[in-house]
Image (cartoon, rainbow, N blue to C red):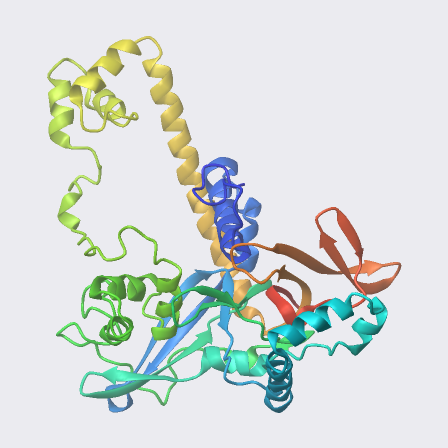
Amino acid sequence: MGAGHPEFSTGKQQDAGEFLTHLLSLFETKAKEIYLDPKEDISSKFRFRTIERTDAGTDGVQYKETDGNSILRLSIPTHQISNRVEYEAYESRTQKEDTSSTPSEFKKRKVEGKNQNAQEKEEEKEKPILPNVNFSDVLNEYSKEDIFDFRQGQAKRTNHFGNFPQYLWIQMNRYTYDAAYQPIKLKHTVEPPERLDLSSMRSNGLQENETAMQEDSSGGGSGGSGGSNKIEPDATIVQAIVGMGFSENAGKRAALATSNAGSQQATEWIFGHMEDADLNNPIAETSSSSSSTTGSSIDPTLIAQICNMGFSSEQAEFALSQPGNSTSPDAAVMWLFGHQEELPMLMANAASASSKSNEASNIFETFQQEENAKRNSRNGEYQLIGFISHVGKSTGSGHYVCHILKNVNGEMKWVIHNDRKIAVSQNPPKAHGYLYLYAHK
């Protein structure tokens, strides 16, 4: 599954969330290019639509839809600790224990400790108290209002669901960066609900009592570009990234990569791409004039050159479409001379494959319309059926473990999958999960 991928083809520790994204994309690609069957695309069961609502007051309301999401990524509001009193008291006690002894006393205790009974030491050891964040606060962090400067005033931006998938992946962002921009793993616990209802987070688009926002002729708006289809980076997001010490180009890349979702999402993206070689490079402008007016990506002047040598335009275009020949008419002619006998068969096979591809494209479009109808009809009620947790203190090392809710002898139990070890889990660590899988009820 990782063959040919610059990261997943190596033996290095990889992020499970990034691999899940790669895996779902692989399912979609294989279904379209190899199987030509939309039912082989498992990733369609996880897709959903999100809606970004921007309320600019008297300027109106704008709804921006994003299809093709496969994972709901949630940030942990680390400042909203539900057990703050207990946690801070524990931290205070442990810090006093660490600093109460002089080096010589600590060494003496260490020597004496070797003679103590291991069980007595374990009984005396206090169970760690970790900071806990309520799952409801995590959801509120995702859907809370983001206030930003807009035109001559301010606007409020909120995130919503547009529809609901058959299976919902939730990624809890447990990795962040410290003040020195070094990756760290959050130790906060978040207990996920067995039953989850997201119906209140759904948006049905523009309401009767709302006025649609008019596009700014100067190219303003909520990160839009006026009458153009080109997405412009949100100036507010770019300014926030620049304020953190990054370049303006890096800020623009972060804003575009996250579809102007907000400063927090852009910050998370840029921390994950700090090693990108082109992070600070200007963003290349795309021009529609680079494509041929005939709809073909092959230069018609090259086709004409080959036709002057006695080949048909179909043969010339087919030869130029072969690997390595797109800009070299000489190479295309040599290829034609080298494949004269089998050329009719090759062109017929290519035409047949193209026909099948077009037919498959129509099938996929119909299938997607049916799937969207199902997603639109679902409510937001889900049942937790699995989760993946990371064992280890570092983002670059450790081990991933999976727990799945299964029927064991007629009773639903959590089963741990840890490499070759498969067993009923007596105490599944749901509060430490990194990826959660919910099934629609």
